[in-house]
Length: 442
Image (tube, rainbow, N blue to C red):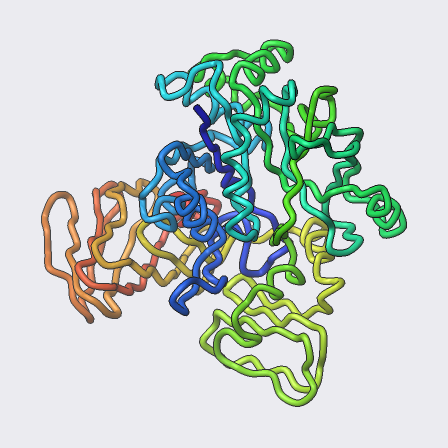
């Protein structure tokens, strides 16, 4: 039997200002979907896995703070488990595999297929997964990878150098090259190298043996308890590049990693998303605006103009990835926007006089959702309902909530709000300066 583990971690900054530590790129609802609507990266991949008949054995691994958000964007149709910390793709894969073993859903002889959530591929790409269960024993390999023919000499992807493919539809792996420069990428393409799609398949027993060689526990609870002490390990470097019995299957169709503005905008249904426009000669430029104020670009080609609550980015497409280095060199401010299982929040203002902090935020609740009941011991709150209809509950006392209603929550009082229809409310927190209570901890 084969099980698919979809890795949903990561909070990369290459798609800033729309992605960051709270909202990962896989949740950006930008890709064209069947029927003319849009969908997120993770929604698209899960839909394709289901269409390929792989949904019954699918497990999603996300960071524990994004479990509810992952369920929201996948319709709660698949099991999701949360990592205690982000420790790389190898650790996440092991976490998922040991969960399957501990719950009795998988046995050591079963095949585990590991795949990332942030990719864009055609439907045939996922149908290839069905071949893995037979190809692993037929090839005598310990590890199977999926690669695709490079469309151009990319410096952003890893490469797999295969030997000559045999009649079984696979080839032994000779070597790997991680994100080479353009000259080396051209050489690799001449050697018939493939882009590494980040998809791996192996017996569960093989992964257990690898954990034991590293001196790591093979029990789910023990690995979970050890998580904060573990180093970051990637599956490529920890397993694939060290294995001498690996084979690669070639995918001839469409595939790309949507990890840059250049690759993502190539998949968008429109050059302009949001309020604003492109005017004059703006060939190959894209504008995405999440703000309510208009953004206009006039007579500039080949750029991205991206605006959101976290900031504004104007960049030549080929240079846009530099934002990751810029953000790393500059102090990171508190996130201004985030999404949760119940909706989203935007920080409107932060004011501090040295002893007191006043934080004002707009909360948007989805219909039928509630903010988890909580107690704030370090601040008082006021809620003003801006729109929608629902219920506010404070210390067990419920009150119907409608536009214009104002509610005050004292320190130590338990409180929650439930949305019967879509709701917006302004929240004002007043607490001590330096207090670490942050919206994203909800």
